[in-house]
Each structure stands twice: as structure tokens, then as C-alpha cells.
View 1: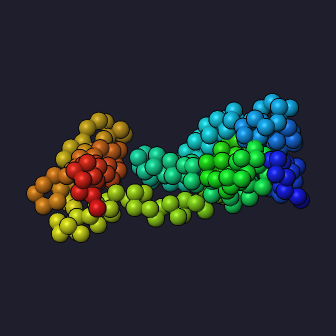
View 2: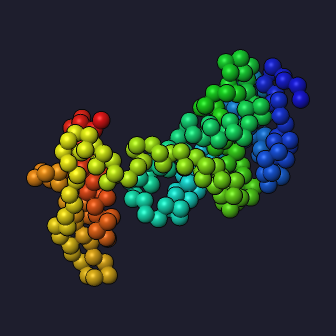
View 3: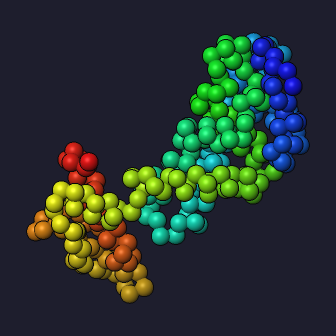
Length: 242
């Protein structure tokens, strides 16, 4: 394959499809997914860039990643699920996925973008990955997107779980309290309400004689996690979380 400075890809859409094993049989929709607006601006005969497919792929990824996290981390609190999803669909992470798939050589870019190193720019790689997901969804449905994306999610999530902001809030609170010589957090159930099958517990977390957070949940463990997160949020607002 020969590089074309006018923006033609180093790798053709059909070759990309075969290499990645994608069930995308419409070469036109795949070509559109790989076409940046800078290419359209320089080629009047090309009518559409990948921005609409990027929009669709972004929405599909939000759902697929959210569903995958919900099913694979049944004990993870809603706030942590949200943070985890944000980390998995951020520009940098999606660009890493695109780089791992070697999408850069298949991107159709304008001369200026190529000269500026566009094939390696995270924002362009991310957009192309999202557009590819949009095309895959239109061609083969949500199940095909899940089969394609979930192995990447499994690999990336192992590293993301080590980030401090995604670790268990009770562990984070204890680390903070001990580093500030405030002792070990003490959790106590301060209330409950509702019928037995829908009971909601209230748990308060204290350091010494000072209450730092209150949490509610359908189990005492869930309420304690929420209390720890509330304490961390309060500490962070005070500028003391370091």
C-alpha cells in the first residue's frame, strides 16, 4: 500500500474490514465512517463526512459501556459506575482503542490534517472510532457492537480500576483518615425505614467524635459506601482531599 498525500488512506476500507473481521458489507458506509471533514473540503465529489456516524456511535457506546459495567460490576455504586463509564468513553481512551486497532492508516484526511499528524491525533482517532461503531451498529446491530467492543472494555477496565477515583470509597476514606492521623472511620446505622422487602438503611461515618458523611442504601453495606463517598465529597469540597 502506498501513502497518498492528497488524503487517500494507506489502508482501504475493504482491507480494514477483513483485518478486523467486521460484518460491515456496505463499503460506502464504512468509507463514510473513515472520512474526516477536511477530506470532504478538498474533494468536492465527496458528499458526506463521518460526523453523523460519530454522533450515532457516541450514543451507542454510552449504552454498550453502561450495560457492560452494570452486568460485570454488580456491587459497584451508581456514582462509581458513572465515573467508570466516563473513563471508558473519554476521548483519550477511545483514541487508544483506535490506535490499538490501527485505524490511523485507514482514515481519509485532508492534506493539512495529514501534515499536522492527524493520523495520530487523539481527537481524530476518537471520532473515527465512534463513527466506525455507528457504521457497525447500522450494518449488524447492537449485538455485533457488543462483541467487537467488550474485549477492549475488559482489558481497559483492569487498569482503570486502579485509579484512585475509582477505588472503593471506604478504602479511600480510610487511607485518607490514617494519613492524617485521624484513626479508622467508624460506621453506625442511624436509621431505617420502609417495609421489610424495601427497607432503606441510613449509615453515618465518623472520625473520632465528628460525623463526616451520611449514606442511604438498600443494605447496610451499600449505605456505608454512600456514607464514605459523601465524606470524601465533603473533604474534597473543603480542599483537604490529598
